Image 1 (tube, rainbow over the protein chains, first blue to last red):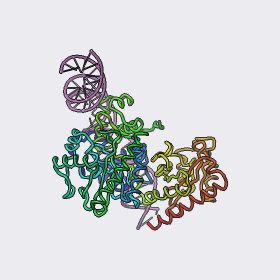
Image 2: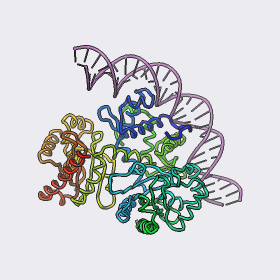
Image 3: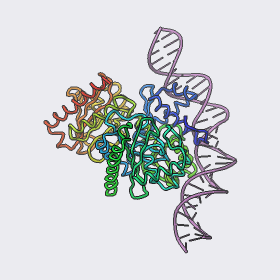
Image 4: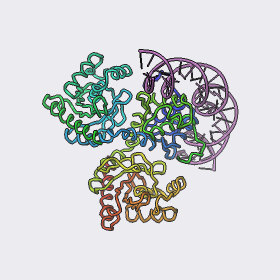
Length: 255
Length: 255
DNA sequence: CCGACCGTTCGATTATCCCGAATTTTATGT
DNA sequence: ACATAAAATTCGGGATAATCGAACGGTCGG
């Protein structure tokens, strides 16, 4: 799936993780199914499952294995590690109510944008915005807003690591264009995503900082073109998001 | 921490998991800190971290390691595996608004009660009710409600595996008392937790089923004694929870 | 009641992980 | 700015521990 030609680290742990990923992909599975799909003996898979089960990384119902609660617990810890992350939950909901558009809070981790909260009113998010999913920073509204606040050096590193893949024809794909875009964002105080990672998907994002230079994450609202691109709409929406972020930053500084 | 005198399974995977747990416990750490705490050479720990990092189970900022987004993604999958789980989110929020008390949705996994959603209005939950945390089934409101719906055989297995630990003086600690309690719950249609796992903490729980005998999980509302124990209050609250569950079951059957 | 399938257990072989020392990088104090 | 210290990371040999295949036992369907 991903580019794994690299040294690969500890093989045992890697295999255990591969099992977890398969379980995720298929919403659980039985031993033989996994064994066949990974082209390994059943006994090996069973060993991994038994170990993972001991720590509740997987649970067993009859002869069916699924992802377990310990993953939920650890994953949730990712969202509560930082006071700002916890506080962001409320503000994401509030932003949704004010803007009337799908709202998200995302942070930068390992050079990608990770969604920590999404509020959409209707049933829970599209696949591409599900919790923990990682999107590129350079072609999302939150991502660009965050990049604009990071020191030049970090931006460099991130681009080096992940490149600037063009996911639609609107994507920024070269270094200079990105630099220009980032300073434009710093000027006007918000970032715009014009269908740069998904067709028809527009968004406005603003980064939140603890103090200048110390980025916590970013908020954004997304919707179809007509809801965002109209100049008046855009200015109005941008103000809404910025106001939310300002309040967020204030409250965070008092927490 | 937990009773790990058992065979222990794959040692490498177990160590990797131990690293993750330490990271969770300390909200991230550096290599030497982990190495010392686990009484293992730094190089070994580094190997584990490198492997976990490759899969984004941990992320590295400078020389500081923390839990990574992939855990959030997998953990979230636990909550979205089942249509009922997804649907429960809305209903937990709705229940909170109707009852005015902390509301939770929990499911049975591996013989324990696992919290999938908690809504409390204020800042996110007390430690004992954080997402993914596992509580006993026999001394919580949701837990008992769920047990009451499970076949006798499963109840037997669960009690055998986890015992009936008494966490307060009100806890049920013997098999007969539990059986009696469960049939009382089946009669009146809801379970009550009278400070059985935490002092001062009372709750009312109702199990939700896909069809008779097929339990999805359970909802509960919790609060201080005066808000729950008063006979009128109790009846009123129980009706609120039951109504919510009824609607939930209806909507689930249509989904 | 019998047969086939699947999950689980067990022991030997060898690949692989652990370790400790060497190296490079980062931080600190003068 | 330099020297010193501490930490992270890399590396290779040796021994442990994971992998594998076969045998066992349980379960479902005919």
